Image 1: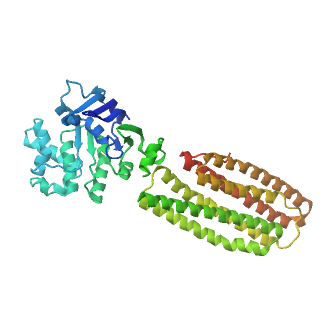
Image 2: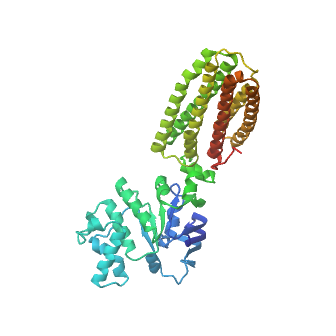
Image 3: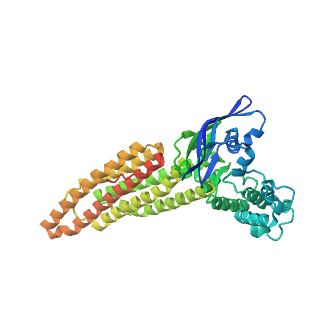
Length: 251
Length: 217
C-alpha cells in the first residue's frame, strides 16, 4: 500500500503553546487511519494541518512538512482552495448549508466552475449514491437539507465532499453526534469509501477506531506515542502509555 | 466504570485460581487414593468433578459477558482470551484426575505387581506444573511459564519408562495384563495432564507478551 500523505517533523504552535511536537506519520493510500488520544492531545490539530485548515486559526504556526503525493502542501505556490478540493473535511456536527439537498451537493462543483445542469445532476446523483444517501433522498432533492435527520445530514456532508472528487477525506469525530444506527451506516460508508479514497479519522470512540480503521496513531500531549496496524495497537501495543490509554487505566 | 471493570477482572482471576487449586487437589487426592487403595477418597474425587465443571461454566459466562459489556482491549483482552482458553485445559486436567480415580476403583484391592514409584513421581511433577502455572498467571510471569512447560519433558520420559516396564511385566506373565493395563492408563492420564499444563503455559506467555509460542517441543 502506497503512502498518500506524510508528515515530517511536524510541529504546530498556537502563539507560544506547542500543540504538536515533531510528528512524523505516514497516511497510507486507500486505507483508514484513525487518530486517537485524550482531549487536548493534538489529534485534531494534526488533522487540521493536513488540509491547511490550521492556518485559519489566528496565531497558529507550523514547522516541518506535510507531503501530499510527495509534495509539501505548505509550499507558497500551493493554492489552499485547490488543496482542500483534494483533501476534503467532514466535521463533528453535520453542517449542511441552509439550501436544498441538491444545492448542497452541487455547491462545490459550482464554485469550481461547473455550470451545466445535466452535468451537475450527474455529479449530485453519483455523490449521493457514493455517500449511501441517494435512495433516501432521491424524491426530495429540492427540499431543504435541514429537514434531514442527523445521520442523513452527515452523509449529505460527505456527499458534498465527494462531489469535488477529493483524494483524501479528513473526518473529525464524524459519528459523535449520531445514534447507533446512523453510526453503523456511516461506518459501512467509510469502509466502502476507502476503496477509492484515503481516509483519516479522529475519534474518541476506541471501539469505532478498532472497527473501521486499518492503521491507528495514538497521540498524547502533542506527541505521537505509537503508530501501527490497528490490529496490533488494540491487541499488543508496544508502548505502555498506549496500553494504559486503550484499557482505560489512564491518569 | 473502568474501576468496576478492574474489580471484575480481579474477581475473575480469583475464580480461575480457585478452579486451578480445585483441579490440583483433585489430582493430589486421586494419586493418594491410588497409592493407598482408598476407594472412598477415589469416589470423592469423582463426585467433586461436578463442582469443577460448574466453576468452569461460571468463569466462561463471566468472561463472555465482560467482553460484551466492557469491550476489553490489549492486555485486558489477552487476559480474557487466556482465561477462556486455560479453563478448558484446567477442566480437562480435572477429567484426567477423575479417570485416575476410576482406575483406583477398577483395580480394587488387588496387590500391586510392582511398587508405585514413577507414577507418584509423575503426579508430583504435574502438581508442580499446575501450581507454578497459577503463580505465573497471577504474577504475569512468562519466564516462569516457559520454565514450567519444560517440566513436561520429565513427565514424558517417565511415561515412556513406565510403558516399557509394564510391557515387560505383561510379557513375563499374562496374569499381569489386567493390572498393567490399568496402570498404563493411569500413566497415560498423567501424561495428558502434562500436555494440558503445557498449553496453559503457552497461553500465559501469550497473555504477557502477545506472542503465541509452541512450548511442546
